[in-house]
Image (cartoon, rainbow, N blue to C red; front, side, top):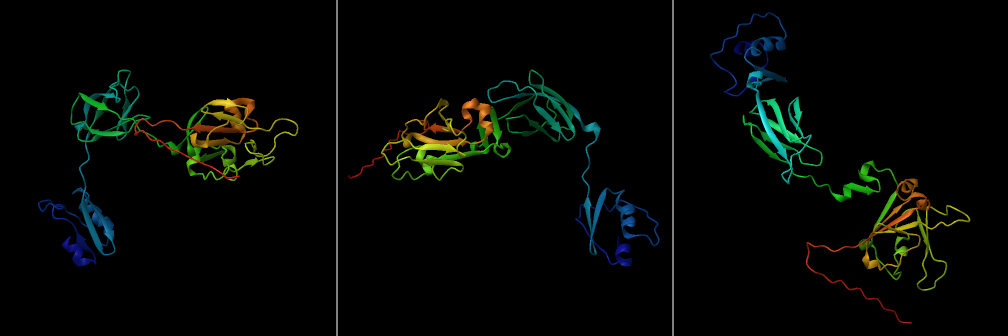
Length: 290
């Protein structure tokens, strides 16, 4: 190294524990590239190098585990209730096995390295084997945020994978104003939905059209579904009892509700009690002078 620094412009940088002063390396080189010389010097010493401008940085390589260090490791994977998990993945590097019908597994792995246990719907875990053959692994369920999942009639899908046209409206975010009517609250707030009143008669139900009139002579009223119960007409509901409204506007709604969804579907979800909170009473009062 002193000869290289003396004959070239390079300087070595390394920690004290990188080099073993007792190690001897013999190299015969004349007019060779610096990288070729460095490889001949440091490869036998299990040292890597990197050249940065005029600096050569030396780093000691970590010893790779050999096949002789691997042992047979056994264990059982359970869920939170203590039931065995069938088909859970246990991996270490490129080696992997799955649990059987009893939740047990056997893998040949390095005891000093971690095992990764994963299963759909559960949080993955990393556990060191430590040469034990009686591992007991308990997986925890992975909760998914509701705003990342869209629940449709034929299953639950990720929001980014749903291509159907859905408009959602939360009543808590709506200023009710003078129109104390659930249908009128969608006016101007849900794209593709037209809400109009034929006259100004108090209490009259407005006409709701999803993406225009679908038939000249037929009925163009959308299907209303309140907490899973379908209705051909707009139900009389207190807006304070409604939590949210979702409007299905394309043909995919027919896969759930059939031909009745040709004019669109308005799904209304009412509020429900919360057992985790204290009892609350909300009052809303409106009055007018004639």
